[in-house]
Amino acid sequence: MLVSARDAALILQTVGVSRRHSIKALECGLAGAPRRSSASWLFDLEAVWALTNWPIAFREDVDAVCPNGLFIAHRAVDAMAPFAEQCRQAAGGWNLAPPTRLNLRVCLDRHGPIPFVVTVAGFVVLCADIIDLAPDGKLTHLSLQPAGGWAAAVAQHRAPSGPGNPWRLHNPHPHGRATAPPVRQPGQPLQP
Image 1: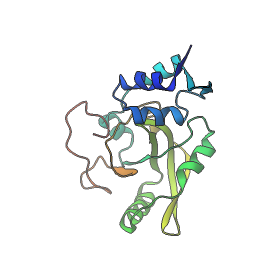
Image 2: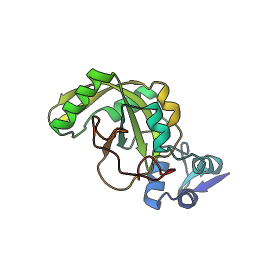
Image 3: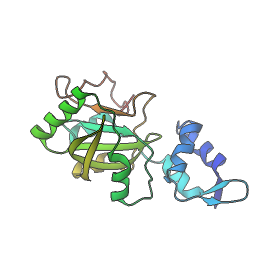
């Protein structure tokens, strides 16, 4: 059964995804490729409902598998594209301050690959490992490879967040390589 983009967005709103973010999730292909009618895009109803069942990635679960932290990005990446194409879409154009680039370089040298998660409207679209970074003019380009075993804790999960930067470093250790996460209560999502 097919539903309109409007109805699909209403379904996603039942789990707290705003209308604007629901449309972004649908546009990136999280509910599959839309069929075009004369008046609307149509989506598979089952695929839309399946998105409502994606669990929230809780901070303690992620901290357990990413003890050295991770880089969380909010970027429109085609959820239906092959992994290599998703990496191409996610790798370039990061506006990172010099101290952040230095911090990432130190982390790479000390701990090896850095877990990298891309979300669209709070839905995890891509899990990869950052293996290198390089200047690209005033921006930074990330070299990515398939994610390690940590990805199972966040793949097909939601990591909802509020407005803000298009990226953030999540660090489980207050005096580690990035800013400490805010104090949270048990069961609080990965990103408040």
